[in-house]
Length: 228
Image 1 (tube, helix red, strand yellow):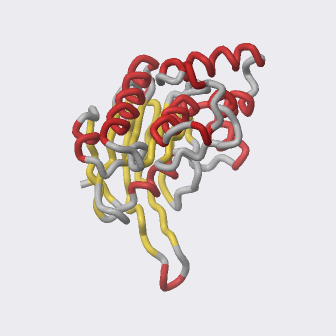
Image 2 (spheres, one colour; image 1 turned 90 degrees about the vertical axis):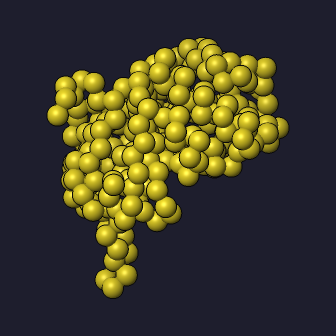
Image 3 (cartoon, helix red, strand yellow; image 1 turned 45 degrees about the horizontal axis):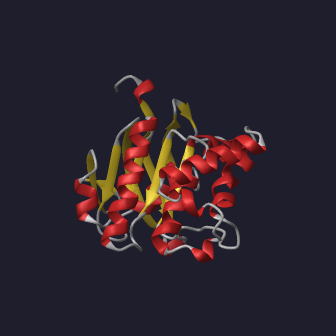
């Protein structure tokens, strides 16, 4: 294995079962993966092959049934919920297909939410950072618009800014352009990759879009719970 300082994320021999008794399915069958800082990785494959399950494990949203996960060199596989929640808030930014914005709040308030939760910055610092992030995704003029007053593409760009709020070392994106038209898909992908490279973040995205996958630094095809 290469020098672990270069890697924000690693997993080794991950297994995950879903369902009970006769309906129990072996979804991940010993998956190993590593993501280097400043690189963008695409995980591709047919529906049901385990892509999203893997992403949820890597994001510490779910526990594996076997194997190891390392975040910035720290083993996370056997840690308790509190430690996993803390690691998520500090090290991982999420962008999902559905933006999951709080639509009754402004773009600015949405981007500030992860910062409030982490509790590292003062209110003026949080406000400044949220303004700066929204400007970087082209929404500097719309910081005080409510989520309901933004288009789908704009909402997803707010979600990208929110994912970057705590300067995470890892961005995990599950079909981040799945609900967008071609123009907005390209815009969101370009933003995600440019900002990640500028900040030295590892980006791992699950996508069905071959054009997006082709533009990533590395593509890992999955089938039946394994990389092929």
